[in-house]
Amino acid sequence: MPTLEAVLADITTLHVDAIVNAANTKLKGGGGVDGAIHRAAGKAELLAATAPLGGCATGDAKATPGFRLPATWIFHAVGPVWSVSRGGEAAMQKADRLLASCYHRCMELAREHGCRSIAFPAISTGVYRFPPERAARFAVQSVRDQLAGSGVERVIFCCFSEATARLYRSLLDQ
Ligand code: AR6
Image (cartoon, rainbow, N blue to C red):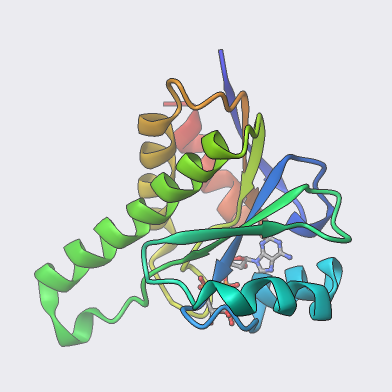
């Protein structure tokens, strides 16, 4: 049985086959977890690897090597920006779909690259302001939906605060 767990950690330190980055559509680096990953993997190497990829659409993900990271791969996923003030319920549902799609695409990439372990940050819950609890529900559900036949045996939800870790643990216990 695959294991799903919540871990309080800096994702750049994790020894897994793939870590997921919360990137932007340009794939040229940024702040938050994206900045930390670029610094730890090696900025020059990573920017050289993402340059030919032509960016990444929201809801999609693209793979690069992990370079100086303990992880072999980085899956750069682009989550939605939470801006419901401009679209109400329809905008929220669109954001939900795009967030779920990030997790789906990363699980597909994990299968394509033969990954047995993968670590996700809480995509979109920082600068992109997606409500953390709602995001965690979609994250856990999307990963559970994609586990069968993926070859992935260990999924880590890498949390950057104790509050986020508590959220994930309560969902994983259900
Ligand atoms: N390890 C694990 N989680 C982390 C780390 C880390 N080292 N650092 C931050 N987090 P964010 P977003 C958590 O803002 O909302 C960037 O500029 C953080 O606490 O990194 O998807 C990109 O280039 C939060 O829970 O990503 C994009 O432009 C989560 O990671 C934009 O931000 C995501 O926060 C993407 O925004």
